[in-house]
Image (cartoon, rainbow, N blue to C red):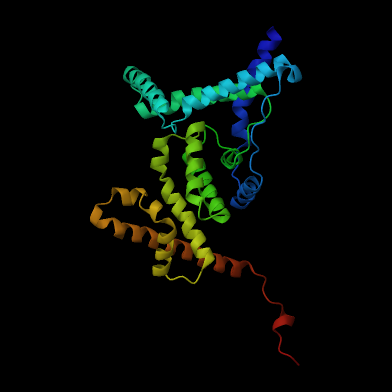
Length: 296
């Protein structure tokens, strides 16, 4: 018994420290390849349970219990169900959270994310362990797992992860990049890597626009500032409207703020390009005397 307690305590400490020690930034190109692979090999549908006689009653029992716990976890942390039953469920959750928030002083939204997301994630994890096997590898799950974030990740780690996701998805499919990017943000909040308030403060839309600006100029480096602004607007106007400076600006000034943001992005990218050219020239090997000597 004493050995078991020591083993469990050591395992708990190891599991707590492991995400911190293994966390590392993934390269956008590497994530792009993982997303392409996940898209090319869509997750197979769940196989129906075999009969108890074929599978064994204990395996069947484990599977049912595990799936039940995962379903309960999804129900706790998911707010996407807009059916009548889903709205009733959310109303009950909100009522409980209002009471908890009033008693503890924790802001309502923070309580909702911390309490229900934590409980939901916990039930999902336990359910998966009991059920065995691995969850279906959807594109969103592959992306989130590849980022190697955890609930201790700081703002800078989250920003770098978001920039990587935006760049990778823009390379994979520009038409669906915004939607895929937002799904990952939603997944980050559900997993407890960040809160909704934290995401708003970080300004996730500005991070996406920076990635779109970089991709736009990479596709056509000859664009003038004016042409660049119009090109980014064509592919990202919906996101541009949601960046914090534009949302906070008076209606009469919103267009000017949009243009100023994009002009700043253009100038920053051009300055980086110039710096890269100068650096490459500085580190290039000098021509040899034989190479520059006039022909005899």
